[in-house]
Image (cartoon, rainbow, N blue to C red; front, side, top):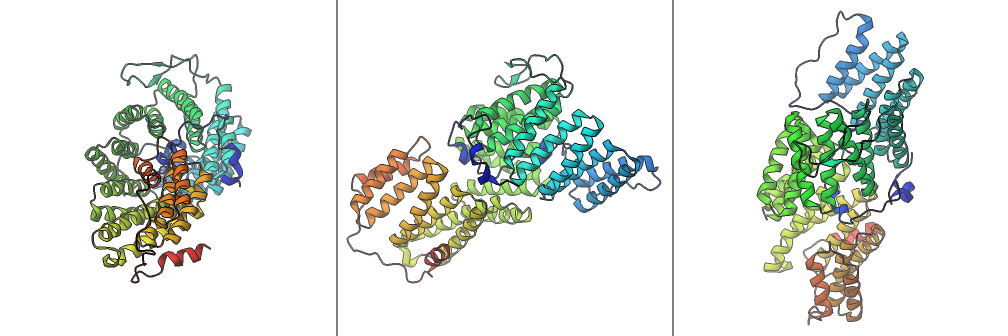
Length: 547
């Protein structure tokens, strides 16, 4: 099994296309799934409302020849109700019946379903094994369309496992197979189809498209992976072709899923207008098909966009509606993602009590869903909020009079987040925590500790290539040197901060670097500001643990 460091050569793009916007990094750190939603990629049924709590149908008295299919259908129903154990038992029994009957296609279809179950359970290695078996059976039976679906599903499982190169190969093979089956690429897209917004591509009618929806799902899946690999131009091409295929097949759910994904891509590229159109149209299609889960995801995404536009009231409305739908469909991670986003919004509005409450709920749900990236991001955000509370009081009454419990709680959140980011090999996440801790150390007057933390963040950001964050960190390094009386080092760092700045660099970071160069930040007259003696040695303890 290959992990992300083993495919670094592929990160410039599947086709060698470079990423177009560094700002996409920040847009993809909001808790979205790594490779698209599981239901979309595996072609599962639409979730139209709360899952029924009624008992699944009994199979007593069912004839043996029909029992296998009935078990498979009941297993699918149980899977949608999150009853994984019962679904697994039904799949295993159905598989045994099809094996006894020598029904290769029946076995293959059950293995596809069980692979989806394995992914839901968080064991992609076992899902890959099920898809391997299903693929071999489809090939032996001469079912080329089934073979394409198995390759697509295995590609998704491999991406979840971390085998990104293998996922690319599977998606490419699936797409080529559908083309060989007569699913020709759509003709040049035209804009402005009746009933669609102006920038939604609509293809001319293709000659033949017998497997358009399955082909579209394969392209959508490859587009999601290309986004993950930062091959944004390739992802845009895949989404455009997939959208045309879904339109030709009359698959409104497929169209909605592509529009939502393309909206995410456009938002990451700062194309706010295009993203807004995609989200609005996706919502219209999800509502028309009564896909409540898809609607919830699109509402959350549009809420994120409205935050970017400064429409905080509209964003909160979208988050509230999305949370209600995720709760009704019992999507734990969807609820967690919306609560995290709403907590961020309330933090901006300085509604600190409600923000902490949202973060607490989000963290509990991320832990329930075993989602470590979500946990790390929420812990970092909650730590920032607690740090803000400490800074506000310290600014008013001084560090010595500020509540030390806010500081200790912030440090605890940062420590937990840092551990998770390290496990995830997320250098940018680690750097964000180190920089936040550096700010705390500087506020306490521990300039040596602050500089050490900022330099650690700088090293990580130099590897990740995030120019905006690197520029901001260099500005903090410049300020720390200036406060310590090291004028030459301060000027050098400030010059680097401005040289590394790009259009995503905040005005605050630029102003800080310029203030250092202008000499407006200097060492205090009373040398060596003393550290608050009431504060336990949290920062020093954490530094010892890292060294």
